[in-house]
Image (cartoon, rainbow, N blue to C red; front, side, top):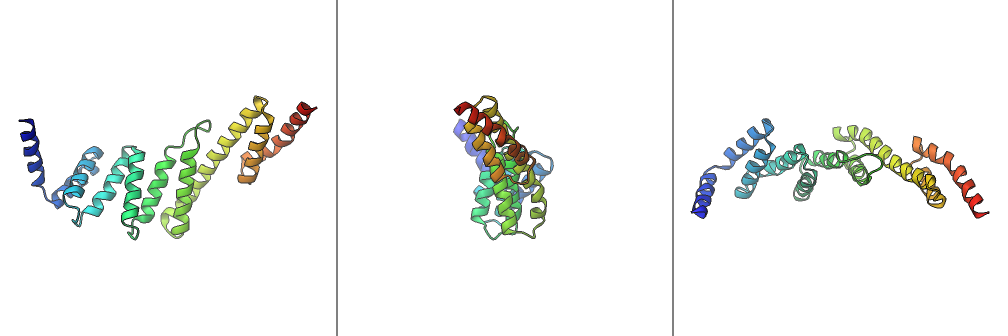
Length: 206
């Protein structure tokens, strides 16, 4: 009986054409029912893969996941879209959205800096591939924020090593900051810490 109900439901859903599913997805998206939008657009993509609405469905599925803050799912959907449609006019937007998925996962400086690193890579790729695009113009500020988070994370670790008297590890971190984040406030702080740590190391050796 249950399988019969499922078959009835599937046949009922299959009566909707691609245009109807696209409209249903758009209405759900407009009403911020992103779960409903994913359902409608996924049905559209699965049942009518060669429809004129299929590419739109792929993009809106990714956008819906983004709005739901389901960033791993959104990243996978955006990356798949770019892979399948590398010449599509939406590619700059896609790269920006991948970057924003990572950017929105950036945490405090004492946590893993991987999201900032990933976001930085994507924003830089966007600027490299589409330097004149409007998203590239906005990416500069996000890049600065990513670098600030990454440099602050490195400084946090260096200070921790310094505080716990692991001077050799601290020195390496401070030097890394100076070499890789030149011009930042963190590099200036690290530069000032290097003589102090070196002095502690010399005292320890003596």
